[in-house]
Amino acid sequence: MNDLFWDRMIFEGISEESKKAIENMPKEEKSYKANELVSSEGEAIESVCIILTGALKATEYTSEGKELNSSYYFAGDAFPFYLVYGGIKKNFSNTYALKKSRVVWLKVKDLIPIIDNDQVFLHNILRFVAEYCCYSKLIIRCTQYRRVLDRLSFWLLHVKNPDKLIEIPNSQEVLADILHVNRSSLNQELKFLDTEGIIELEKKKIRVIDKEYLQSLL
Image (cartoon, rainbow, N blue to C red):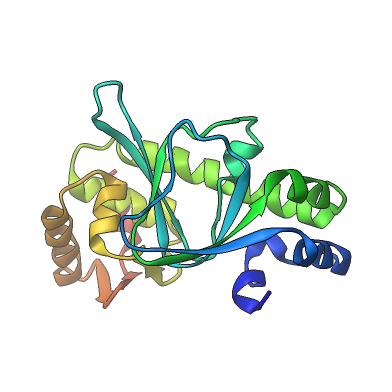
């Protein structure tokens, strides 16, 4: 496996024995076209995937078929560890490739013993799952605000680190979907904050200039 596979948080500091065991275990590298189905609701969770390139979108629906919630997973993420460690046996969402993507699938039954025998590996996985759960809670908190500007402000201050350069995830369209807002409205508020000197837009990145102003909106 190359650096594109190993260069991610869950593998940081794991033992050479663990790496060799992963290299020797059965795995499948697969490419998906944009909008191609990756896994289906109700399908047994037998493997987890390491996302090498691209992005995946997992969508949950109401009983009436209305989109309820969507989660995004980008290059560097692993999916769905939070379901595996939550004791969930079957997918409760449909997952699609948001754009052309390449992933490596690893069998859960082969991978879990490797993780259990490496304390660093186990720590990394639990941290990864905890961070994902905290992120999901913050997104739910974010969408409780009514105005687009307020949701954007919360995302900049609390979901992301306002002291660092913030990268827009994939595109404004994806960010709008994450915040459950209209893309044109999000673009309008981003331009407003940029014009007022509250933030600086640098292509697909945001630099927060005035944290106090954003906080005053919440």
